[in-house]
Amino acid sequence: MEETKKKTRFNPVKCRICGRLIDRNTEIEGEDWIMPSKNWFYCKECYQNWKSADTHTDEDWAALIYDFLARDLKVSYDYYMCEAQRKKFITQHHFTNKGIYFTLKYFYELKQGDWSKGNGGIGIVPYVYKEATGFWTDMEAKKRGIMNAIEQQIRERAMRPIKEIKKGAEQKAQKERWSLDNL
Image 1 (cartoon, rainbow, N blue to C red):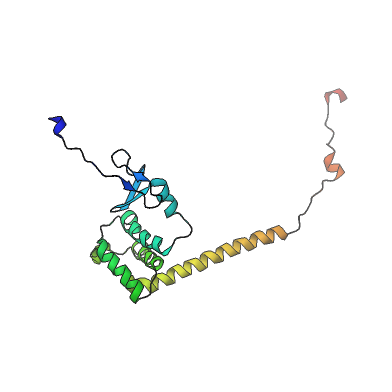
Image 2: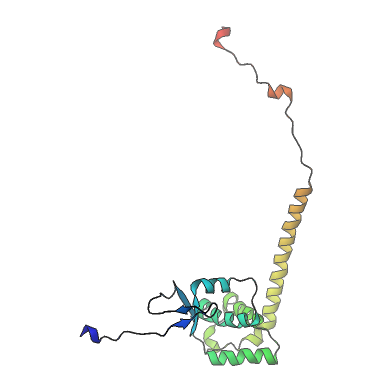
């Protein structure tokens, strides 16, 4: 009877970055591979490197939108609706994928927006895009200002003359101590 138990067999899938085949029967999800969105497979190392990269292409930002929804917000979304909305925002409103990503991050993480009102889509973006852009621009300016101030302090500190303090001869000579021989 035990032999009649049905074993789940998965076909191997490819990492979206390096193209390595991932065997979901033997490799462990979360340790060896990651699926941030439905049917988007990554080697764990490739995924971490991709997500932490300093520069992303516009296509990367589109993928990061869905990664943000699935892994950071942990919400269920309608991919086809979101994709149609995203494309509409880009063509009609001239938004960028990076702008859409940061708008969603601003609204749902910082403003604590209610995901359930979105009906599984990202339709809130045009309504808060300008506000979010202003917020992130201000944050970047403040951050840059702080960094510039710190860099200026470092330059000023480096330009200060170094004062050498020399100990006098009397300070160097140790004071004579009393000794039992003198008694």
